[in-house]
Amino acid sequence: MVCLGAMCAQGQWADWSNQYPYQDRRVYSHMMHRTSDGNLLLCASIHGGWTPGSGIPFEDFALATYLLKTDSSGDTLWTVRMDSIKPWSITHVVDLMDGNTLVAGTAQGSYEYCGIAGSGLPMAQVFVLKIDQAGNLLWWHQYDQPCSRILADAWESPSQEIHLLALDTQEPNIVIGHVQPNWFEHYTLDSEGNTVNVTTIQQAYHYFTSQHGAPAFDGGRYIASSVLDTVGQDHLIVQLEKLNVNGVPQSTLFVTDTSYCTPMDLITTLDSGLLMLLTPDVARSRLIHLDTVGNVLWDRTYPTGFREILALPDSTFLAVGSCGTWQTPNLSELCVTLISATGDPLWVRVYGDSLYDLGSSIARTQTGYVAYGTKDMYSGSVQPRLFLTWDTLGLLLNVPNALPRYDQLKVFPNPASDEVAIRWNERLSSRSELTVYDAQGRLVLQQFLPIGSRRASVNIGTLANGCYLVNMRIAHAEISARLMVVH
Image (cartoon, rainbow, N blue to C red; front, side):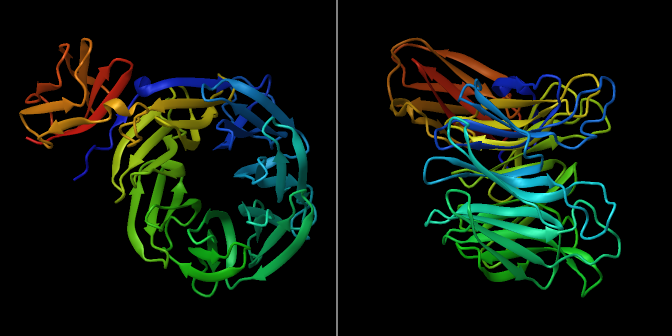
């Protein structure tokens, strides 16, 4: 049984939301990472001047890389602008063993399109940079090659070597009739950024568009990529490849049909499996849960444009993206969806209250999550800017309470239809409050508890079927439990 229907709730659940504009420029969010010092690194790109009323978000290419670091309250610690790197996409942030941070992705290079003169458009090229926790640039490198590259994965091996896996493609300028390359390049760097080795590995299929990597439980890597099946009918399929810790291919699987075959994200799950995010367009997504040998455990589609997936300790998942469409005002907002271990959407939280907000990335916090995105990116009336939304949903994410003295709130029977008994560990030393919220975060029941009590009875006969949050405030702590109502 699905505990919560996939219902939307507005921002009343959010603890706070912060915005980060860049003066006289438009900024676009790429990804967010919680660094080893516990703060948040926001990765973005700076674009041209904003034209009021244009409604065109990023009609020009990036001017610079923009890194912004905040503390746990969203306050800015530092910002860095790097004009030398003009990113197509920032896709990987790695906490290094020496305490510093690696940022990598695909930048705009100066090479033309694979020997075809007069292209005029910049080519996608792999870049990598290293910063310390204060934002100081230690070194950077960009591999300008005579064809486009897309960074598929970045990691550090136990020997402190840095590995970059770049798939050779024709993106972003595909010429009809030109055969796609069918190799990837494996770059190995030392901790100072010096290139130790470059290995080219030939494959049977031709690479196409997005690729994403994830660590394996045995220390290796997995790479999901879309490839062109030229032996069949020239249709796209998804290839899942296993690598060892040094990037050497071990095996290859084909795990999906010819629909929805653009990988957007790939993560490992608590059952030692894989969860692959695919998308056919900005308004729909597909999740495929696989075991380590490629068997499909479940395959689900969703009417939401997911961008990133996060695995939680209770085997559920959080997905961040955008709800709605770009064509209708006020319908495209950053949204977070909780997904069960079997793929059922449990609830959706929507944030924005604005025009055309894009959700890019998500990170778990001690009591909930923080979501990152671009605000007003398709608005002609407001300058696009970065923003964070922090939400405390400790119970719904099954995060242990920080104050264990009151960590046992018992509700029985559960499920229930008419009345429930609620018990807790300690006798109340002061008058307290018991509240019940529905799946949309609305207060549906409230009653006060007398001093000295350890038990309460709550009449739930008027509540509709569904899952509810029972919350009680005791001294300086809050404890919660789930309640299922079934009449």
